[in-house]
Image (cartoon, rainbow, N blue to C red; front, side):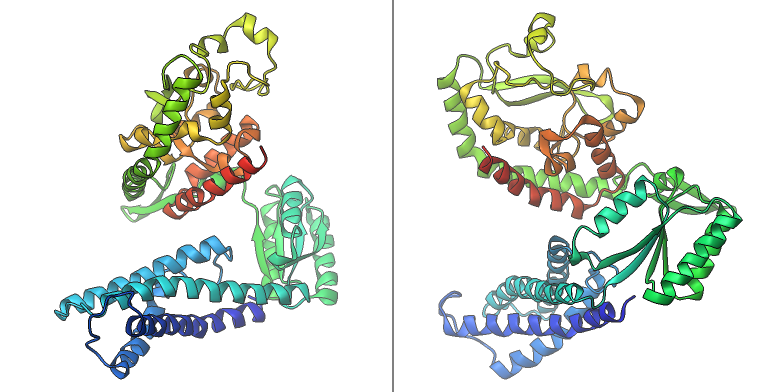
Length: 471
C-alpha cells in the first residue's frame, strides 16, 4: 500500500472522531437553545454530557471499524462511504440506547440529543470523508500517491482494465506499459527483463496479469519477481475461477470439500432480501397511492379498455405468475405482438434476440407514451413485490414466448424473482442489448448483497429523472 494511502487512512480515524464529537455537541446546543425538543428541562449539566460524549466517541470508532470503515482496501465511492457510515453510526447509536435502557434511564431529556446526534453524525462523518477523498484526488492530479501499473497480457481483458484505470485521474492509477503475454521460457525471460527495466526507471507499484492462458510456471516466476521487489501482484482469473466467487469450505472426515454456491442469496440472504421487499413495497405503495389513482383516471379518460394490463410472465425457477401494470397501449395490443402481418410492417429494435421492441410502436396511447417513458406504468408492480411474486431488485419479468427461445446461459436469470428495477435498468435501461442485460443480471445474481440492492434502489430515481429530462 502506498504511504500516502496509509497516511490518509490513519488521518481518517481522528477526523471521524472530531465529526462524531461535533455532532454530539451540536445536538446538545440545539437541545438547550431551541424549541425543537419542546421546553422540558435538561436533567444533566454540560460537563457531565461532555465527559460522556468524549468517551462514547472513542467507543463509536470501534463500531466504525466493525462496519468496515477502516478497511484499507475499501471502495472510495461516496455511496459506499454513506452506506458504511450509516451502518457504523447506527450501530453506535443502538449501543447507547441499550446502555441507557439497562441503566433504567428513561432519557426524556436526552432522546432528542440521541436522534439529532445520529442524523448529524451521518452527515458530518460522510462530509469529512468526502473532503478527505477530494484532498487525496487533488494529490493524485499532482502525481502524489499514484499507483504505477504494468499490465502483462495484450488481450480483451487488458484493454478493458487499461481503459478503466486510465479513464480518470481520480482513480489514482498510471499505466506505465502493457507487455505481451509470455508463452514459454524465452518470453518469460524477456518479460522479466522488461519489468526490471521499467521498475528501475519508474518504480512499479502493481503488476496485473490479465491472460489466464499464461503457463503456471511462468506465472510463478512473475509472482517471485513481484515478491522480491515488494510489488503488488494481481491477475485475472480463468473461467472456472470466475464461477467460484461464492464458495463454502467444510471438512468431511478431515478432507476439505468446496461447495460452489449459485448466489449469496442462499440462506439468510434470502430472508434479508424478502424483509426489504415487504417493508420497501409497503412504504412505496402508500407513498405512490395518490399518483396511481390519478394515472388510473387518466387512462380511463384517454382510451377505452381496462386500467391495468395483465399477462402471464415467467418468474423464479421458471414458474409462471400473473404480472400487471398500468395499461399503456390500446385494448388487446398484445395480440398484435406476434401477428406476422403486423410485425412485417414494424422494425424490431431487438432483432436477433428473444426480445421484441418495435420502433415507433403505434399501439401506445398518448397517456401510455408518457407513463412508459417515466416508468410510472410500473408502479402497480409494488403489489406483486408485496405478495412475493416479484422483488424490488432483480432481473426483468420474462415473457413465456421469450423464455422459450432462451439459450442455456440465458436461463440463469430465472434463478431469482423478477425485479421492479435492476442493474440493467440503472446501466442503460432499454438501450442495452440482450446479451449485455443477461451479463449484468448474472453478475447481480453471483454478487448479491443487501448493500448492492440499496445502491440500485438509490440510483433508480436518478436514472428516471435523467431519462425524463431527455424527453
